[in-house]
Picture 1 (cartoon, one colour):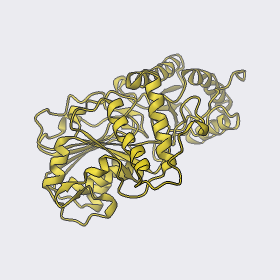
Picture 2 (cartoon, helix red, strand yellow):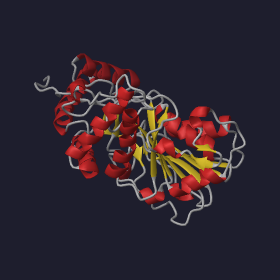
Picture 3 (cartoon, rainbow, N blue to C red):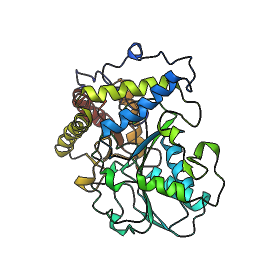
Length: 371
């Protein structure tokens, strides 16, 4: 039987992700529109994006937050081009985006002393292979595989290398051990349901020391430059962006941060995401035709939840299309490079009631295509 109840919000895309509950453009503070981002008003808004982020995330003293160009991709590549080359590099990749950083290091930067540790979709490499004397690059959460790093016990407190963490689908949804992380990057359009094109970069004092003491042997485009005259460009971390940002997107981001505060801050956002995952876990446990792509229970992502089905690829496409036609779930097909399956975003901007309403539709759609 076709279910009677549909999700109030059928947007389960893993990027751009669903806007927060109750979102309306009318609620944005848009006095910055039409004003220069270099004006006192523009700098204040951009500065708030940095300071509010640091406060809500509970960053350690001395950590800096900056707004940078080109989304999470821009933030990761900015730091790779700026700090790599001084030490050997360990790269851990188990899904599409992590493999992208590996490609950058091998084919673009052409690093000589590089170790790659990879795993297939659904698995995690042996993270204990990280050498504390090497720089290390990894994603905290594999957005396209639904596999997350369960903890940071494998990162040495006595490391001499830098840890560079792409956390775009983890920050604001998972408990991040900041003291173990020297560089963290993310984008607004993931867990906060913000807009695209802007990245965020978080630097530890150790990362700043590297930037100020090391000059890479390759040219740096203007949008990658974090230092001038051997010193960190502090303005980037106080609201003076490298290039012109969208002030509408900034207003949207500030709105999302205030919403996080309203639901209990970071603990509230994490709890909402984990509650959404719990609903899907119960569904998977009671249905033999569906399972998590992640092979280990403690590695299952609570944001980009990736599911495998006992259907072939064409049947999965039919199922995804059927759910979209019924307007109960949009954009939930697996990433193009991943095994055929479903990917359901379960970050805090998604309501648990909508996840609960979706699941009977999954069962209905499965029976339609499996017959």
